[in-house]
Length: 530
Image (cartoon, rainbow, N blue to C red):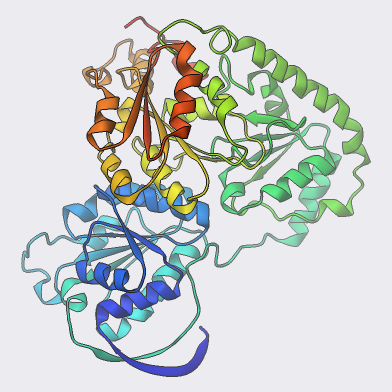
């Protein structure tokens, strides 16, 4: 901690909280007014509250904002039922190693264990979805606890830190004398980086350079560590083919002649890496690149002649695989001109309308697969998919958080009708807060992944898989936003042009083919008629 000349000032406890958040670079808090005194103090300090409609969506917004800015986001909530709704978002951040500080209102200290209104053991509540949980016990420790929360969230393996704030402490209007001497900001991530044993790094580099069939498999850690330039340099300089996970999409340019594409479980029929899967499965050395799996620099000391000699054959193999992939998908992209619209056709046409720096977001389930398999990672595009727990409802709020973080870039989101139903109340938030995103809702009136998975495993589906028809244009218009209904493939270009030209958030109600199944082998074995 940096110690400067002491400055004594009189401040309320809530004002101290706001001053601490300001010192850590906080510009936004994602909240719904509670804890009210803290929120009001933050607003007075110039920190803007983004008022979500429900806590789980607010935590998803915060997560995406932090992923894009590398700042530690702050989400707030009241005790009791509101606090419980933070759990999904915090669990996703814990699983996927994203930092977030949650400031949660708690009952007054004197009311503990007296069956007070909305009293519950919040430390136990958050114990399975946060890496650090503490209750502020005294007003003279406020700065200590806030600093600890940010340090824990952004340090080591990043994750959620929860700070429980008893209501009597921050509602206290007494102006206490505080000694302000701290200047260090801990609101960025990562605060520190782990480094592997240099001797093991050298050993790994030798294995890679001597390998006959090496491959790099890049995950989401490349994105969160902002290591895209480094992995792209290694790919090009040392002629390594690179495949990515879904979270790792964007780590390399997929137009590069040595890019395999998204590999893994989406390698069934029409999968972008289907014809190149042997390059991964038959590799003799695989470099897994995640948050803390390697450190670059050792390869430059070794002879790269062998890798350079292998490059022409690798490029030819990958080019052939891409060509075979394009042929295989023609029936659902180029030639799919009849209604209802196939999502593959829509995404293929969407590719032509995207900016070089577009931000692409998808909800979990089929939505993530359509984006990962049919949109290209190139130029400065960024991809955000909820894959820590891969729960429904993340996509649209994540798009909102990303737009807040990137006000001058376009944000496009794809969500299924099942996932969108979890969070469509946030359309009102978009209107009120002036958040502009374009979101397509895949309206196939079903929980697609669940439906096909149940048929593949059990030969039947449960009743919740079928959704009653909903007019999403009317839902958007009810919130004062723009909506377009798209049920004809011939009008895809027209609707996308209008959507990207419109002001404010736009919803595209895409009436899509309920028999479109993404390249997941298990699901493709069961495609019954509905």
